[in-house]
Length: 394
Ligand SMILES: *Cc1c(COP(=O)(O)O)cnc(C)c1O
Image 1 (cartoon, rainbow, N blue to C red):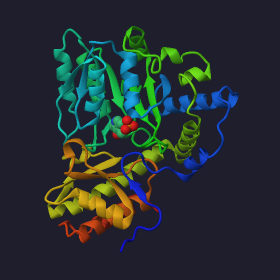
Image 2: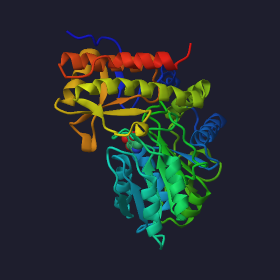
Image 3: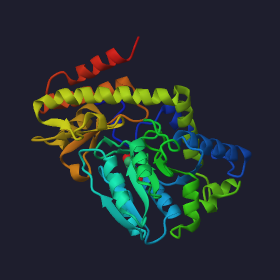
Image 4: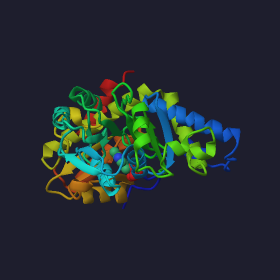
């Protein structure tokens, strides 16, 4: 017997649940890619992306996933042999650094830990030791989707400035843009990148990059640039060149509608919704953890992200929980990845999420824990209900 008939619910950290209106926005014929309508769409999206990144710098849209956008960033500002400092706090900055080393950069990892955020003073200390300024750029993920950590991007930016080091500061916001505050210019970030399929509620396939003047200066000397990614190849007003070829028309229709939805809600309200729902998930996990099997991967409560919660599982099989949730109840939980493979599951709470989606997901996890007889503190979902009842005022 199952209770899974009806729409399956995706609680994985990307691709995320898409609003019906985003799906419907794509259900129409393509338009002339040389038309004024197309040019207007491009212009509105580039303008709105720069607003989401909170920068006066230029934004670029690539037909690519996050990995493609990583490559776009690297190839535009680096030359072969340049040194890159990777700030570890999980999997994704490491992955970005791996791409850089394959592209010919020299990569140094500032070792961190899968259970905590990057420590800004360690970044400052490392940069101060680089007296010859060999390090050309520093890369970090705002939220690491594997560990579930949220790094303090503003504090890291301050640490970089305090060191007096001129390295470019480059931030991955794939799992955070549109969900938690991000201030590219205010926080001293030179390049930021993101993707369409997480907080931005759009199908996978679009990668975004924003670059300030310092990054544009670095671009002039960078010899890794290739034609598709190159910012200079996308100069001018011709729409066709903005995409280095045919525009991904339908994905742009979808993105337009998704950003319209964010504007209608209000970006600040979207941040607050993520904070409330993220905390609801944490309230539940904290109670379940009293059974000594489930726990938070991230030790320090203030470093747990508002878009994804990584739940460690000791002495039980996280795959069994995921299997039960999907096969019996129609909820797809995220799997543990990287160092946490086989030792964790993840609950995403990013993008198009609301109270019933999150409470339903928590309820299903609790059903699974009961059915599988996995020891856990009782009343996790109730703690989430209590939290929302206290926090969302009437
Ligand atoms: C998902 C993710 C990526 C990779 O994006 P893809 O679209 O899968 O290539 C990069 N960084 C972070 C923080 C992510 O969450």
